[in-house]
Length: 141
Ligand SMILES: Cc1cc2nc3c(=O)[nH]c(=O)nc-3n(C[C@H](O)[C@H](O)[C@H](O)COP(=O)(O)O)c2cc1C
Image (cartoon, rainbow, N blue to C red; front, side):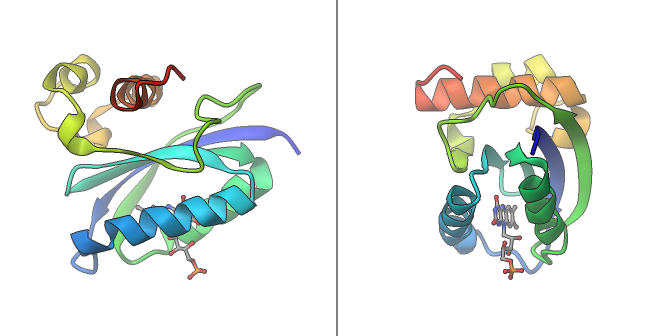
């Protein structure tokens, strides 16, 4: 089964509660680990941006569940590509702490001040996520 990478953007809804963040990350990590899916998630209290990498069937299954989740809306597919290797292979789902994302990095990949994945291109989104993970985890992807 070939490897794919998927990146999407979404907005939180009234059903979302910030206190759920930790449990969403934990259950995503457990589920992804079981299905050999890796990736990262960014959330700035308004928008989500997530990258999923793994077998096409598992990434598609997880994405289908994610888009039905009522805690976010306007889920837009930003990137879907076949890949030879993973960029986030070290993490079941790395959470990028938004407080550590620098203004320079946001401005490097978008024309706005606040993190807004809808204001990024597909390739810019991937490069942004890679740099954000590197900067905040200290590990080069
Ligand atoms: C922003 C966001 C990101 C999510 N990421 C994942 C993920 O990476 N993997 C996963 O299994 N579930 C993830 N979920 C949870 C799924 O949407 C869903 O709630 C979970 O898979 C349970 O689905 P089920 O109730 O159909 O079993 C995420 C949810 C949200 C709101």
